Length: 605
Image (cartoon, rainbow, N blue to C red):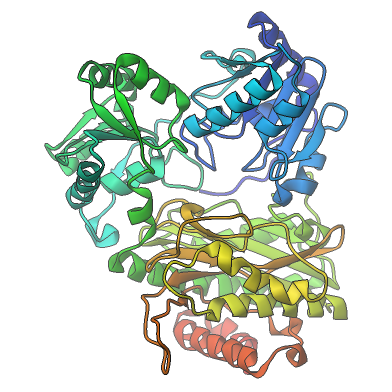
């Protein structure tokens, strides 16, 4: 469980590893090779053996890609990693490109020479992704080559092995719905589309569908595997035999056939021989699977992962579990905030010590299974790096008269948490307080918005940004991401972001509300709570029912950073009501030495 702080990457990686990779590329006759961050399961957080991008480049972020040519290479990342990628991927070897404006296919269309052979691993790219690459190859005239033996795997001599953590049942008291009922609901969807079976490739969907959890992925209780769900509700779960034990077959019952993951290929051959109609998500499934199914004779039906939306729209049991997890977690975070407000004010505490202290406090709960991600413990200028990961190399002290940003979360059987708080160490400047208050205004605006059925997160994103936009300010990350139920801390298909998204927000979805502001080289600010989409309700005097959000994260928002004169009456009322709820809920759970500070930290303003 415990977070480690040794550097996971090294700026020297590129100098050491690119020559090895290029030697393997030459053996394969490749002029270029695409390295996505993704693994074979399209996980955000990936097992150690799949950290191919980090091995080749030194970049340890959770999203991005590289394209390595014979004489040049490029790193493609989004705004979250603008600073980090320049620190980790040596500019002597890489150019830097914003992947949101110039994605992989666009870069290749502009830079790959006519006739060049550009390789990709079809297990690491989805069918939809490969279609874009094919379009680029036709436009620019380069040859797109599927490489079934990844050259990085050949060059990476000490590559770790695949994880084999046992999968375990996830109790119905937490799941709220049996696997049989879930499979039947998926089967009903398949009948409507005319599909005989659905190929499920995403580990979060497999964990949700079969009510199992695992430990193959850091910070996410996921078992790596695949599944086929049939139109009669039966299913085949493909998972390494070392993970099943004796408990899993009995738990899943006779309607679920458990087979080794290495048997997926044979199962596809059989489906092809039967001429089966197979539902495949082109945005999630490896392109190799779709290619193999077609080659075997199966008919492919493009279909969004049928588990994604029901997984995202939590049932009442899961929502109540999330509330309970956030009360438990909120008490731990509040105890930590007290420590920050007292012992950490000396200026002698460093980022690693603070992160360890928070983990130690969280670990006092017997219910904690893991962190939900490595804690972002950012002091001063490091707080301006959105997804900063502290290491023994980057570790600095929480200096007096600076800001400290801490983004953290826990994995509990009843829910997944994610919370960010920003606190002053010593005295904050007037500018810091101004920026914090404007971030808070955006946070409150999103927390209190009412919206009609069919509204997407994209439509709400600007609401949280307006107080910053009014001052000519902004932030380069999404305002909110979906969150799983004892699953990944980042979950789709819902999100609140500037990037277009067609998924409407629906009752039961859990998202983050996390506007921020980052002044490069000086400080970062973010205020993050998790919110649940409420069922639509009538508005007095209105004509349409409106959805709204319930805030479920409970911990003080630092009042020393608030400029009350910038808040409206309604915004002050929201903040006071929120703190009154925090005080009432958490006070009985806090140690005696915290309570006097807590009363003041949640005072009305």
